[in-house]
Amino acid sequence: MIGIIGAMIEEIEPILDRLTCVKTTRIGGNKYHEGSYGGKQVTVAYSRIGKVNAALTAATLIERFNAEKILFSGVAGALKSHLKIGDLIYAERLVQHDVDISAFGHPLGFIPESGDYFETSAQLNEIAASVALVRGVELGKGTIATGDQFIADGAKKEWIQKQFGADAVEMEGAAVACVCAAFHIPVFVLRAISDAADMDAGFNFDEFLKSSAKISADFVLDMVARL
Ligand code: SAH
Image (cartoon, rainbow, N blue to C red):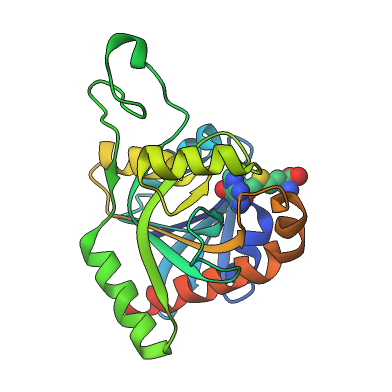
């Protein structure tokens, strides 16, 4: 079974619209929709926003629904200027930008016995690259920084970009990747840009959430069909 996560209802609605749903279960305040797409068994859930909710959903998909791989679909703020609204980027690796136990000499983002950067599945990333080729769409790749903050500030944006070498910022990806690493489950994290994490981010996010979420969702569904 393939687990698919979005953070918000808007991020999974375009997936649910195309899913043949057979069963919906409520666990821990989230709904899990089991069904099929392109002959593949999938379970889709939106986690609610933030790292804790995302970790809860990823762990539930793995432990209760036996997810063998997890695909995340959603929107993000661009940290690099070449990334424009609607552009797709997948994470080669993810890091928690709000983890700081540097008082003990650890690098920012680092947690003992857990690490700092979480790698995504090379195999899933390759499938994404081939889907992009077939569709003739541009697919960016890079480092995604995750934290429990909506970034809407030029200075903060620059700090995250420089400190972690990050290309985009969001609020769930690294949590999902951390859970998947713990359970040795391949993970793929895709984001379509909704804003530039600057002073206009809140406004842009509201305007582009739905269109960018759909761009990401449609791409992930194309991947499912090829898994
Ligand atoms: N408007 C929502 C809150 C959205 S929070 C409400 O009021 O309920 C932003 C969501 O989109 C998060 O799930 C995060 O992963 C992603 N995101 C998009 N742009 C972001 C940014 N600039 N900083 C952090 N997360 C961002």
